[in-house]
Length: 254
Image (cartoon, rainbow, N blue to C red):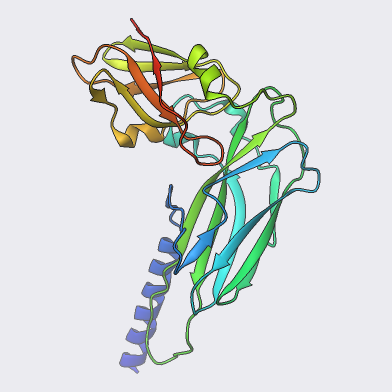
């Protein structure tokens, strides 16, 4: 009797631990493994003219089935500074189907739909497309098992009507770089969220970890600046499709 009780306790602990791991976000994971779960892209663009929603394909390149949970969640404003305040309300998107079995060597096309348009009309808005894949388990009632899920959080950008063309050469004439109090302040006068692929002042590159902080539309962002860094600013961006833009050179003020 004691052995059965202890085994049940152990299984309960394993289950709770599994739920914790499954619920933990993993930002920046793309899952684009040819022998695993393949995602259509690393970023998602939702233009306002998509009245019937947009599609996103997830492919299972493994020999086992998965349970796929899909949803749109708010961008984590506590993960970066100076994020615009439009993300505090409810999320105006749904993903269909929200929960679906994904068979081995099969693909599933999701549909993302805007349910109500209360978003700013003069700039991009950003959300997270959260895709959680839980592997299927063989039936085994005699032993405890730990199920690990993989979660991919992709940036979902909503673009309203009338947005200017995403033109990095035009951005280069507008973005301002200022050396201020040992930091590099970058001012973004465009209606787009900007993410640096590379950024350096003179011969001093900004740390890779810091580059994950986006610059919000019509806002600013600060990055650590190495002591003695001076000269021209060399930079490139990650565009809305996840591609690297051509390298640009700008003047450092301050």
